[in-house]
Image (cartoon, rainbow, N blue to C red; front, side, top):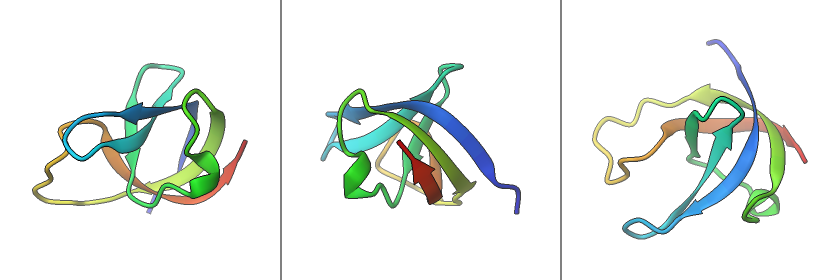
Length: 73
C-alpha cells in the first residue's frame, strides 16, 4: 500500500456530529479516522504519513478518509 505524505493545516468541521480534518497546501481535504489528540488544534500545521481507508458508506461528506501512521508538528 502506498503511503501518503501530507503537509497541511488542521481544521474542525462542524458538520453533523463534528470531526477533525486536514487541508493540504493544494486544497485537498483529508479526514483522519484516527486523529491523535495532539493534533486536535484548529489551524495547527502538521506533516503526516497516512494510508487511504476504504469506508464504504459514511455519514461524512467531506474529505478523503485516511489512517495516520506517523506525524510531526
